[in-house]
Image 1 (cartoon, rainbow, N blue to C red):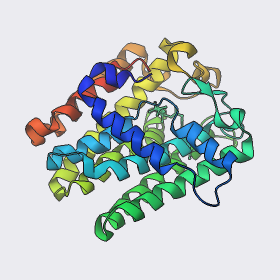
Image 2 (image 1 turned 180 degrees about the horizontal axis):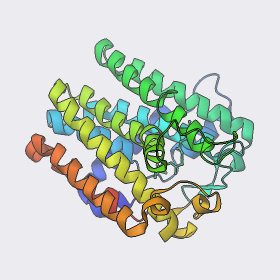
Image 3 (image 1 turned 120 degrees about the horizontal axis):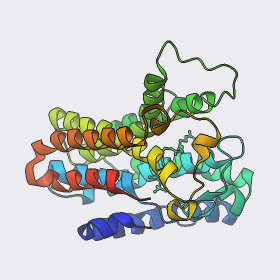
Image 4 (image 1 turned 90 degrees about the vertical axis):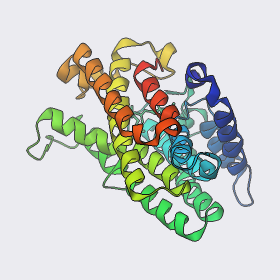
Length: 303
Ligand code: GRG
């Protein structure tokens, strides 16, 4: 499933370092029951793409020439991402059975354990940052992470995404067009964490304000492109290829880019956004090349 590694084999050392640290930070600890630790490790160490941690490391590399200082923040953002996947799959939310090619956490274990594993991962993200970073970057990183994962971004986007299915009665789009509403959901639900990954990497590398802004521009563009492609893959692929259920969006009558724009125009939009992302990181010259290549992966990915 590590298609990123196939695309750019020079990312192998970064992916290996991410796996090693994810393994280390989720190892058994005093007070954590074995079932809870197992559920956490089952979900975190499952074969995900590690897109967000990679973006974090490559942002650090773009601003400082080295990626290692960003490893704790890279793990923290993956912990928040995995918590959101575990909770999203629960019966009360998306009610899924398959994630990363395996039974979802609540299927493999049970609902209560899945909720608690997600809760633990949120706090593990905070703990790793407090434990591994100096006071000033830790404070800045916690600000970025808590904002991106909070009610105005990730959680609020999820609430509106569920609302868009009509679960809480008539949909209130706050005078937005369906396309604007869709963009607003995805900016919060998907792009915010992707942008935060880049910001965290920038902070770890000691980025200037200008450089943080360039990383944000890149993050916003690929975050949106990632979601557009996600919607396209849901239509184009099989569950075996994606490792999760497909066609769910259309079954639920959800707003998606292909349903609003059509498949080809959605693909063209993703290409345009990737072009914008590459322009945003041109400021880093050679140090930003791997970010530009990763942006290309976002549109070319098959999983
Ligand atoms: C429960 C607060 C809360 C939020 C859930 C993660 C999420 C928000 C929803 C999942 C549904 C979805 C399709 C989201 C959009 C794109 C996305 C986040 C896909 C999963 O990310 P990948 O493809 O996953 O990077 P891997 O497994 O490779 O890490």
